[in-house]
Length: 465
Image (tube, rainbow, N blue to C red; front, side, top):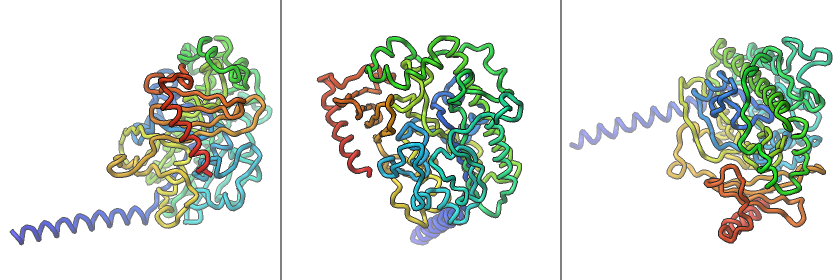
């Protein structure tokens, strides 16, 4: 019996040694990372998310091979602030980028995930919309094809010319970068599309697609969101009814012809992104660079006429909820879906984790958490802790966009419009009112929920600096 027990112990130690060797091998061979960051892509406008009209076969294949996060959110729904949060892993309260002009400081930039990965031996590339204030960080990358501001879908004089569309150009730039990559050096490639963001100065066609997608959706009537009704608009507070979001609705969604034209073009821009994803995956496979993690997401959501609004900014799900897929090309199939609350501030630590930087270099200012354990199947509670709520803030100054903050839990949402005097509060029971139609802030039966979430808002607002 003693001999049997001794043999069992030896076998157990051998298994443990093999596991440790495998883990060390992973640590010694960091993954390539491709981050595809879209612009204003809401969570439900992709095939894998249940959209019955849109055609996104390449992104859907990533979702089938990887992990889909069904409750992914931005902490601020506006381009520069969200992008700063993605790069730093920090809330706006900490990184303090609150407008389109302010750049990351030299010290902040040095602590972003692309600069840290480059310091740890990665070859790095950036393509597309930088989205923060100038100057562009050209010298912080090995390959830089970024641009300032919002950019243009077509060069001047080439509107509608085949092959001239910005998304197709970005796909070609991504292929160019990967052509010069090898299995001998890990790389990070950030592809930051303009699509499907509006072309603000194009009033006739605000979402100009690539000509090769023009034939899509011609014989389809796009269904309107369930809250795109006059009744849902009328229950909004008056300051939202007269906000910039309503003004933009007038020019994009105010009648059926406008709605169909706008949304079909928005969908066509997404189809162009899908082609870019396909080009990236094909090139990785062609170059035998499949030791690669692909992260597909968006900076924020977008109203498609929901509640009689356009744009984003506010705390409704369609504004703050985004798609997120993480796919390891070395894994044949996963198809996992995780329902935990995950945030844009989790992307930086996730990328640093896959690059094995976190194992060797502490980045204490990061406020997010790596999603890698969730991708690898960790059980929340028994194996790792995880958040059950998060803080939202939108402090961007605009005369017609009220500022707001709040708390989103698994089942409840608390909203404070902080620039309104007196402060206007909303409380939604998401479990029973997923469309956020019934404000319970004045309901005595919901007072305990209101008081608890208001107290948590105050605590987090004070401690997230």
